[in-house]
Image (cartoon, rainbow, N blue to C red; front, top):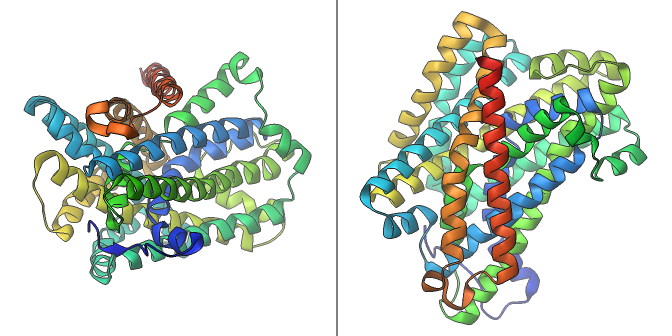
Length: 425
């Protein structure tokens, strides 16, 4: 894929922006996957608009880390997995690879469950059958990859627009209080004082940045054929940063939209404990007085699951090739990963039904939280290393901000894991 998409050297700003646009949107879908829906629904129904600030903060963290990831790929010509293979010993590389594979399987598990729930809500399919059908998306991935990388990016953007359009309509139906929405984006001490609110806030922060997205972004920015000199790399970094910011703002809109709809529909009516996707679907139409509300909600969920499937496949290929220098055929790689997700999902759905899949969805986010720091810390180290980055090394202020973000994510995820252990223990 590297250098396959030409960038016009003498074109104006907008043509160059269009040429560089795409990788940010492939990354953005990881920030609006089914795994994020439960925390946003719980936050909105239980605490109204107060946790919008947490969604904004987590999005800003994501923008910072994704732009560092893009810069690493552009400057060094190596993705994050390859940089780890170059820098660390073989045992460390194998360990990092295994942790990343576990995270990709956890992501796939969330996508399987989310898509199966959407199929059940839209078409009445049993959960087990819906989970089995999701195995067929390997055919869609193969078809899109054969069409070319630009076609894949365009398809992902269409799905993002579908999700965004659905939630724009949902917000119109729910008629949120715009003043309270604006206030929700302001920080409040209540988040720290209220343990229940803090728990959901940590869940939102801890599950927002997807570890495999950092590997993915550092690779796919190299699909652009930019000049390999200092001027070309500077321009590529600028446009890649702009692409990531615009794309991740769409993820901010969708995640905030889920919380706003939950707050305006459930919280104001005293329904404070709507955390499961199925419950939200059943209650939306009766409360808003329009049958379209529940249908659009399920359609957005299905688009979200399928979108994440496409980028998860790419990330899996990049991680395996980067860490181990092994390349499997895309369909085989996808089939193995999907089967690893389908088996526990089928067992859980068959034995425990909807409540079991909901718990499995939460558990998948905890697994992602556990792995995250093993991707974030090497990324900050590498982009702060003059030997790897040369003149493009992180400046002092950016290095400090990156380390604050990395430490905050590590502490928040540790707290989330301890809380989860306390709940399940």
